[in-house]
Length: 235
Image 1 (cartoon, helix red, strand yellow):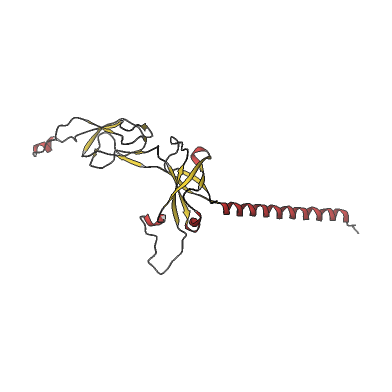
Image 2 (cartoon, helix red, strand yellow; image 1 turned 60 degrees about the vertical axis):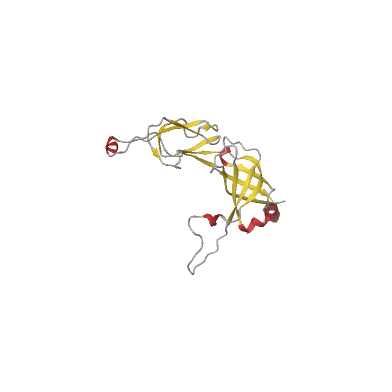
């Protein structure tokens, strides 16, 4: 008959009990930290860099002669970004009694300093009044738009400090401050209505846009639309 080593069995029981105690303590520590973080901070990754997007257009129908900038170029306010002229009229049109008004080429200037975010028309294209040639974004005025769940909005107020983690800067952290809170949910301005007109209703937690000012923005690398994570201090 095989003899049971009581000392070895007792040692195993002690080790097992010690492991259980360690796991319980670790669980309590993790739970306490989560409670502490959730009670002092509101965190979300549903946030983006925002900036004013300024269209560059002409006051009348024109034909683009040339573009003086490329996508991503930095321009100063008043700098020429394109040259336009009167659209060409074909000979067949002239024969019917129409004739192009002779005008000299005109330069189109940037209304603000910033970066070329998009180019919508190229040399040879005819644009109408108000149709943008390109879009600039004002790099001197960038902020974060964070969508916060409505159930947490009672804890968000202007003036609260925010830590902003920027994905495009390899996780670099910037400081910010809650500057404003939208007076309606994000769904209110959606092109597709969120309200159900049928008998079936599923409650969905809405989000409210919150504007966060960046204290020291690195405007040259903070591109509109890029993702960030925000951590709002509620105390």
